[in-house]
Image (cartoon, rainbow, N blue to C red):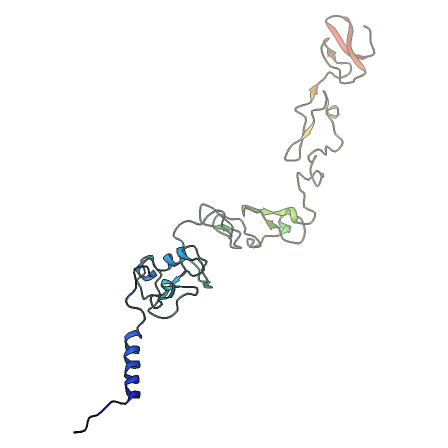
Length: 261
């Protein structure tokens, strides 16, 4: 009878195959402290911020890794993600995603949006699109808008910052009330009163002459006075500072030069 004895090399191959079959699927029996039995990435991030990713296929350091887990079936992101998923950045970490896909919002746009100011109709001032309640928007002007509408020659007006109206002050030669310069048909402008004062108005004196926001002279704050030769009473002011109210009769006095009766 001949006894067959397995060759030593064949036995080694069999053992290698058995070992490979037993471990080819990664760690399937995790110890209690392994991140796969805890909260996944969140556990790793809490234990060591420098190794915040959990792999259920790695036993070293209880599965916590420095790099995100890319091997299919090994990641465990935690937060409700089951073991076997691709690892995601843990809480508190910075996402490395470079996606530029826009996100949508079901709520109203904020008034401080980088796109501009949002009014009640949803129009966005600053997006270069004229909305329902906007007169203009940035460089977008209504059809036919020109400086010629205001008789200011060639060119285009600009748009107010709140998109409420066209601004013709940028047009050449335009009359601007409020720039301290009398232009066109303005009577005055700010403190520029065209050399006028209260005494230039009959029966008035004082320093109350002002310019209105519409660039019109307003003498309502001037003081009333009595013209030279007109009847007055002792408390009246004469318009001519060199005259006084006087007369021979107490009941009939006039503004006259000098002192006396």
